[in-house]
Length: 509
Image (tube, rainbow, N blue to C red; front, side, top):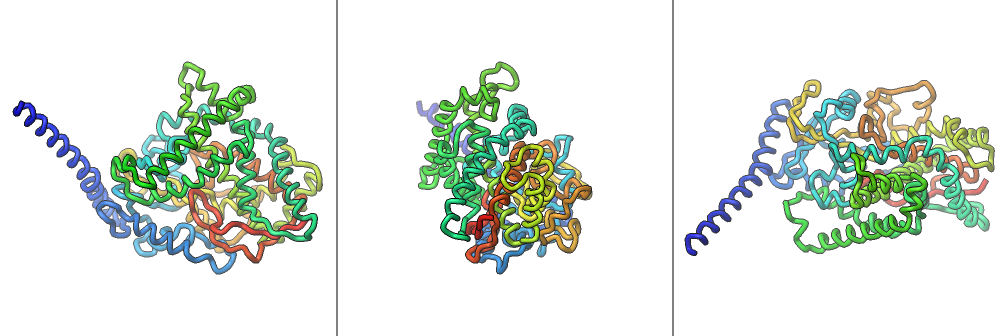
């Protein structure tokens, strides 16, 4: 017995030693070797902690930027939204590297590099997310299409894409316009006793976006999904904290207060989605919307098969990303038109000319709203939904003069490229929708608010149609100015949004 106990003890010690050696290799040796390769190319960055990397530095920069609103309503917002794209290049040049734990994030810029990374067809770059391998950071959207990669991503993409083709989205226009009209009717009630009243359009458009997504993608309504949206807002705060914090393997199982809340939030969201699927499943299968297509895929016996847990993961993703993208686009577009009244007048005149004052726009009308389209594109340039996009080099890659080691996460700063004076001219920080007038085009890697390449946003058609329709209908019935109570403080949460809301003064016309 003594010999057996000694053998078991030895085996345990060897296993523990092997685990420690693996940790030392992955947390210390691999980052050290990668850092040396980058330094030999002249690529530098802020000094890093061996364990946490530059997480604390990043958090301090963001906290400092967030603490002070911009002095006026202008569009030179990169330094507040993503201060590391201004502070660190000024010190270390482009490209530069920073670290989140043992993971290097190489920040590159320029249209050619962006195009090469995002449209790569050789398999050198794998789709990756901000969350990386941190399971606490992946809870919000990490197991759905946005957070997947490789074959699993391709499989989900093939099932989901048909739900958002343009012909199907056009078929939803009457339902979307009815939801928008209901929102505007409520505004009219507020305007019955006042010539001018204040509305926080950020809140209004989030409710609208949630209602539209619930209706056209899941066959439900905002009220049915309201609890899910509320839970996801709380989950977002915990996910952001996890993204900026070094994750030690196994930490999620330690019953801290935050870990317990993460677990309970995740369980309640999944339970609510499962109930929603049970209630609306049959109706959705008949209509072939997003939920219906996924449920149909769950019953097949081929490569398109999806399990119920996969469907729940996708519902989580689209409940968050689908609502956020369109709501924030409409918020920023409304604020920009409230500030730039000459463009508000141009857009309204176009809407009246194409649709009249009272008729809801149809698919043909939307395709004729050229100025509306220009305004939305310029809004997406100045205030893109995502500030950056990541790709991971799965092998050593030559990218121009850069030698990128395998395992490096390449960070493409969308917002920096969208504000680059070398691309957009001396007025790059100004609102000028005429940049997107018919016939004007830009390098593929210069403008990509929805991404480019194989992983371009699958919901892009719905986002643009919904935004065009809503903006046109708002302008048919209302005029607006920036409220004196509005504080210009754009910030990146998971998407780019106003920190203190988006207050506008509205009056019926």
